[in-house]
Image (spheres, rainbow, N blue to C red):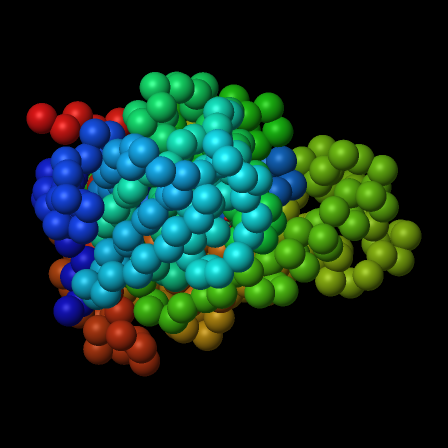
Length: 391
Ligand code: GLA
């Protein structure tokens, strides 16, 4: 299989509901959906309060469930390969929740623990077609889908920005991944046919129309799995904080080219200087792309994509040979304006901004040259999280 096809909301909802009825013997009363995402540009800058420009994907995580009149939360999750995994933990109405085993359930537990009101025991089924470990935010999709399910179940609706922040907090506290705000924010606030320019300092966001007949975003999954909870991501974050501390500023968002000179003068660690340079330049690139994309300045945007990748590979050092190879293949393919890795890195996906009519040619190029097993999809910017009606 070289093509990833989204199953769609109604198919996934039916699957989830059937599973729920079979597993728990009654109908679910609440349901929700939340998408995965790719980031167009603004990589490894959200935790420095920079600008990011992600879009939501048509791949979804769906949660259905109902109160079970016990003090237990019981979750059944159906993985993409059909395997079923289960977890249970005490309801937050009777106990303070703590992280534990199985590891996957921490994403759910963290959300229950951070939901603004105590939740009674419930049963739930999760189904998802968001590719896991591919840098398209299957974890934020699960968190936000679950939070939205709790909103439907309890009737307690939460402001979307606050919701994104609570899901980010859940990810920090339970799986222990010190992520930025980008993933939870886009998964919550995305709008069809738009990218979202998020100011990660003020948390003000602007919808940027990206619909075009001429250009598409082709996503290529390298099929190399990353593990972001490893030490690399927290290290990058710490190095950026160190740079900001040396410059006596709250975050690298406030830094400019002169500050980079200042770091040099201070004889600051060479790696810290490289990370800071990436962040300062990537934030500027992101603002530029947000302006140029609606004007259909695809050639310039494409060059900024290549520069972003180069910087992520050489300065931030979060790429890998497979992602670099995919970008090189794109560079020598016809009809491609630009390409870059997307997401946390160390595997996952590459995106290419390209002319629609060349998609098949480019895919063939990748299949014949890439040393791994690529999976493709054309990115259709989709809606963010929502409560679903169970008819
Ligand atoms: C992961 C994190 C995000 C962001 C990206 C890199 O996806 O969850 O917060 O930092 O990496 O841009």
